[in-house]
Image 1: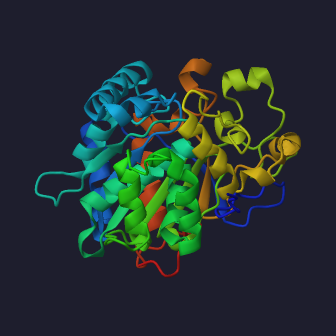
Image 2: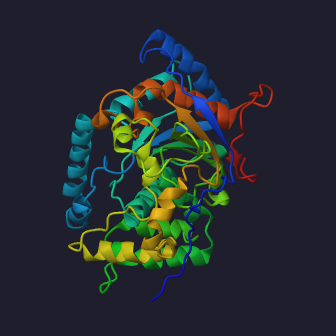
Length: 404
């Protein structure tokens, strides 16, 4: 069976981006948890409610997931309760180790929830979404399927909006979601055919990962789909330029990229090759976002044959086969850090603190609680600015014109 390309990658070239971008200097604001912090968060919470936002999801990136090797996923096939219990335990351990360095911690979500829900306000839950964190197509596709199932389960009554924040490849989960929600029937059939070996036994034809079949039925119109794509608003943080976005699969889209322009290069490009001493100091911004492009995946273990086959077939569905290994160096040299869809904020967060383990080559800054207020303020300002209070000098968010 052959699988022709369905979902596109971004282009990798040094030409100016097709979408708007703007350079921003980050401002930390009041100390987290202080009265001044909660006072600054309250009007943002009010503006979210006026925009119709009824929930906010926080989605982590690769390597801080609960199953980066795919072992617990295999355990869950035969022992669902044990697999789920181990996932919860691993998530707690990861949080204890990483804190808020490149990871949305439970403490981060709790503080944000408290700040967005002052006494007497309508509930605006902040939900952590955990996925495996595997660095390959199938891992991200599985995350997209499970996130769609969770959004569908909670629903979005009366056409209200859902705001989703995704760190690193968590943002590429959103890109896949946009293609799944707005894809043609043919595209969806090819996607689920390519991955069927993963979620359905090849010979017995029985489904052993039910959530995949549930979402397939929902997207194919066999069951009711409670998700309105135009009411999903995505914000990505340090997401490598990878999958293309389908404009019909989201409402509004904003990207944060930690970046300091290099001399002699346009501000939308990253230098290559990066200099080791500058990487150790986090001098140029987010090196993980710069380098985590196509060709940097880890293949699933051959011990998990069904997972390996599904990921191999997804390479064609996701257009990875068109990106030959010989072009890897050219892709890095292009320095592509700004996507061709949405509005990108090229953010200077100031001097990097600590060594490379603390700043993770510039990739850890986005999930630090210190920047929570700044990120929320920019998200609200860019996505939900009211017409009667125009934000002078700021680029408008790129969104699907059909979205409400």
